[in-house]
Image 1 (cartoon, rainbow, N blue to C red):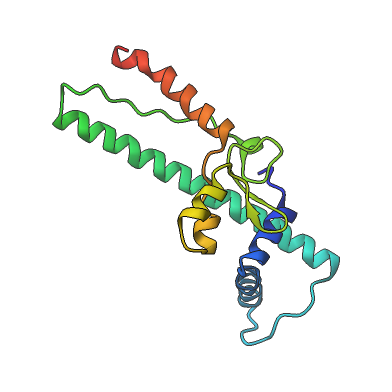
Image 2 (cartoon, rainbow, N blue to C red; image 1 turned 90 degrees about the horizontal axis):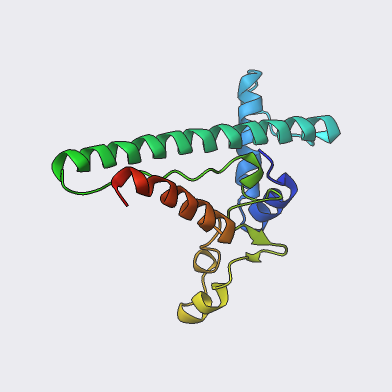
Length: 166
């Protein structure tokens, strides 16, 4: 994963989620060494590096599980639909996203957030003007494809069109 974890920590903190993440980390560490009920203590530089490595590995694993599960389920849906509606030309287009395209990476294909906490997408202001002020609505674009991600989807779709006769 090439995501900028510093930016991710700022985002989690801005959304009020950092305490929950650190609580899960502390609970995992405490239960791993068999000391239930011991409150977390300051980690220091080595502990912080260990938590950072743990967080990065966990995020990468979860992202891989999500991608595999989603693509498998989508392929199954396409196959099932083809069995039911045999005349329909269907294909699954999976864009080529890689580690450099992760959220908060240098060549991201996904919307992240600005610092301080704010949306990156170009329609955020329009969306905010049309709805009551709400952090979820304002930040709705996080994790969704940006222009580069949309191009990756378009390229994947274009690549499979010949397989369905288009």
